[in-house]
Length: 246
Image 1 (cartoon, rainbow, N blue to C red):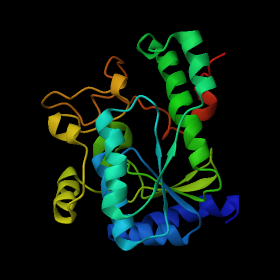
Image 2 (cartoon, helix red, strand yellow):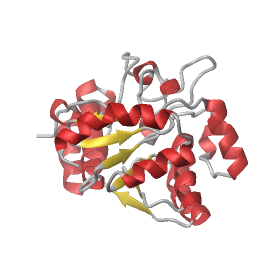
Image 3 (cartoon, rainbow, N blue to C red):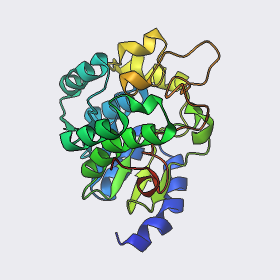
Image 4 (cartoon, rainbow, N blue to C red):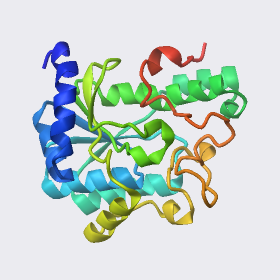
């Protein structure tokens, strides 16, 4: 597909995907071009990985192994590969980028300012993501409308102009109850941290368990005040907006 086709096709696909179940949504995405699913190993992403593996769909599964993940998350990668007989490709940050970040901000400088936190996400997530999506025409994610206010209008399909690809969000309309039911039905392995109050799991230094009544993503970058805070993976023009270590 040419660049002009992506934007024009998104609205049509959004309506088309709304009428399909999860497996058919993923199967359709796989037929559109080179498809890459990036998983953070959270419960939503585990459902998508399961659907890909069980249906043997030709979708590349990748993860961003940032170097600061919980041990439980890292262990889940291999467990998931074995359970669904598939390979999850790991993308890691460049050591030179990590060293440059630490020299400018300090290794844990992300606690000190939003700028420093964005710069850390750029080094450990955005740059590896760019590698994971090289040559991709379709990017599949586990975004759900119920995850946060910032994601409440998540479509099934959208044109990512920054990366010039189609972004497919097959779980956009799923509730957490639907997620849990699928996990139980298909015996999907999940991160044990979910049972300890972590509905959304990122890097260990930047994730805490949530308190009763808090939104699902309240435990991410909890020291910041912006309720719509994101790492930049799913924010338009993120690459140009996020500062890089000097």
